[in-house]
Image (tube, rainbow, N blue to C red; front, side, top):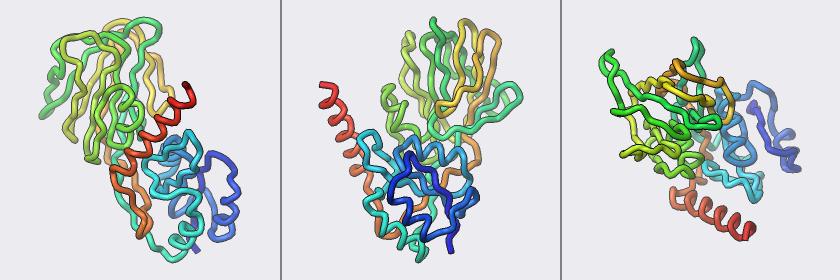
Length: 259
């Protein structure tokens, strides 16, 4: 019998079918993330096994990376029992090194200002040599660095691109007042080195706070070797346009409610 782990936004009635069909533990062969994108990110942070995202179909749960929903629970159970699925590498985790410790983000690494503007300098290493990525000290609300997984979340709302390549990092600025502040798509082996020159910022990953950083603080960001693997059920795969359509419909629904 397949061993599974479950991370669920709520105690949905459909969970009974999963507990009846599989061994459920904290060390499953795969993890079922039931809810929205936030639930998927939590599961990917907490578990090293492949993740099967399942939409809960609630208004706030767009579930961008989920090809199935709780309405498909019988199909999900049958597919898993008969091992009719495959595991695909969705992305790599983003590695952050700060103050002698390492952190790994799924959605993004974020530097956000505290009250006033935060001033920072961006460098990168090439063949072991430290080089300037941007010619000036930048000031504003901060920036985020994301992969394809997080490109549809905070990055998208901040004006950054939606990324399809799973071995790409993207740097998107937040309200920066400088001549050129377009998002930057970085090479997969790029290591960004950031130094805080003035002001204070909050450093975090996937909404999890790490530290308050001020003048003299430094940290490094790069694409790690840690994988985010997703479970894909045979015969059930959404096209990119289908996923974008769900985001559009979700936003239209939000705007209708707000109006």
